[in-house]
Image (cartoon, rainbow, N blue to C red):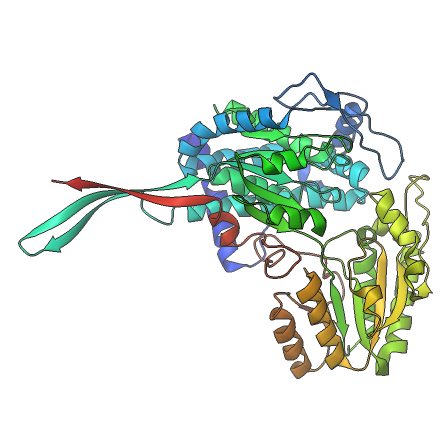
Length: 543
């Protein structure tokens, strides 16, 4: 084990340093070429070989195998089945596996977990195809988000746990002078993990959103059960299988990390959430179930829920560059990102000009034969697709109607370009809610002051993960920052070119602040780690 720690110590130390400095750092390159010329084709072949088969890589078994995933690109079932294990059996196995794991020093745990990330890199391309054909993300987004970017977020969680669990000495002799004598105590400090963790995944980012909680649980000594969305199991199943294999190779019970697959007809999520021995829950998804998870008693809960992300437009030195940047931000993965902009607050004096430029930029992008289909990807679910199709019935004027976009590679792909609606500040019944997917609203306001107050109100009441703002006025920028930060929403100012409000970088950007209704936790601040274990000090008097 010392050899394994020596192998990964430099990586861990660099990751700790990066999390402090917040400068650019990426352990896992985001360029496919970094992984060898043959890797993409081998990954595609491995993905295709899994189709129509039981997923037998997991070191867990069952007499009940089921699966229901359908590709948003082909609209054909993947026909991959997974072991369906009863909730109680999963928890019992997790508790048993966690006993030995909890007693390992954090250096050993961190080394094993770093080794699992190295193993996952060997599967990046099959994970990419699995992500593409369960979520509808484009190939490149699937590769980057479920591969190197997810691994970087996982490493970030490992590094923070590795640091926090060594904050205090494990053992010391404490002496208090008492005149001619003294009192001596041997003190032994240890971090005791809270128990069994449950990570509830989502259908759009089944790996990226799951890995931080998964690895935060494991590095702090907890066992973990990974509950994927039944429509997006394969990407995270590949990851869990790789983790289990490395655990077993290093003498750790592989059931320390288990996949809790289920079906839409027989969901196991509530049973797992309410199990008395599940003490930690990480959740990504809609607000209704997120609110339920947050109110569970006796649980430590980390959530990322829905939000209403705003764009505040005051002024810009180059309106065309601004419009092109925002057009890409709203079109990327058909708006199915928790960071995607939705409400654009535009003052009346520049409204017509700005609205026209945004409409034209979106239209130009989605109709570009080289960029449109690849940027939009495919719509993951019929529910999101139907919401986008019916957006015109929300009661607002349709500035640009969304519709299917031809994908030359996948003729049956479920595609939908963004619908742009026009409304006014008074019509909150239209825009004061999340409209997940390719729907955006341009809201005409009296002035920038009203725009700021409406964006602030949306974040306070409904939550927000991002806010984009454009202004050439330093005083206005300061006001936007202060007002939005007061409702715990970060602001991205004046983005143009190849950087978008949707993007959050590991080791630098906090993803979700935990301060508004969009979620109660953040990737990755110390609280994300510290709440998963308890410091305990034992004392023995020395005579």
